View 1 (tube, rainbow, N blue to C red):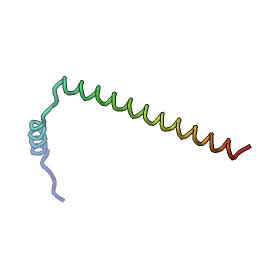
View 2 (tube, rainbow, N blue to C red):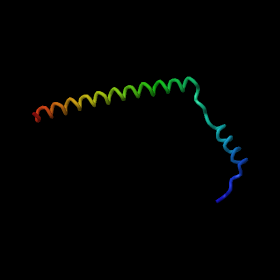
View 3 (cartoon, one colour):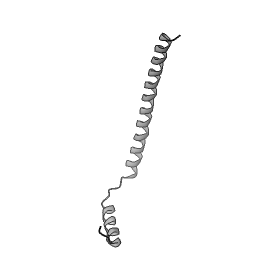
View 4 (cartoon, rainbow, N blue to C red):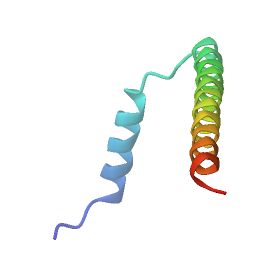
Amino acid sequence: MAIANPVKFVQEVRAEVAKVVWPSRREVVLTTIMVFIMATLVAVFFSLVDMFIRFGLQGVLSYFGS
């Protein structure tokens, strides 16, 4: 197992961080808004699916039940 040189490690980390392309403020805001919109749409979709399944099961159980 090789022992890493801490100074060399820090230099390599800085070199890699310098290569990162950071998003602009506008990109972050738009992406965040899109995430909230998609999460809301998915929540509404699954709520509707849940209601349909619940009503269907209640209908089947009331038909065969007492």
